[in-house]
Image 1 (spheres, rainbow, N blue to C red):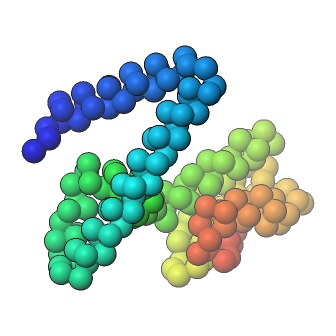
Image 2 (cartoon, rainbow, N blue to C red):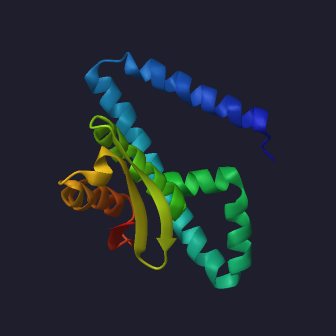
Length: 160
């Protein structure tokens, strides 16, 4: 079994090799990158076949294996499993943080009031945004579009 200290050594060793390769001329670097790509393609195919075989035998064994952070990390790296999406609330907060500087530059702000599943979010416009004649435009063209970019499952943003 590989322990945390071993993993840190492996990562350090990989970083050391990457730094060495970075100093090589373009042709040499191309050979190293090509070799790396070929090895990764072989590993990805082997892992995909292993997953397929394990799935046929026992889904619980596969779920167990993916709980291991190293196995999970390698499978994510090879795009054989998808990393989990952050929660809806976290993605909504990220979207709001993205539009906030623009609103604050006009002495306004926005806050998340409620999530009405499955597809509605309520927000409150604050400061000058609350009474601004352009608030509907700001809501639809800035806030709603940004929220939907982060949370495609949200189809309606309502100001309360």
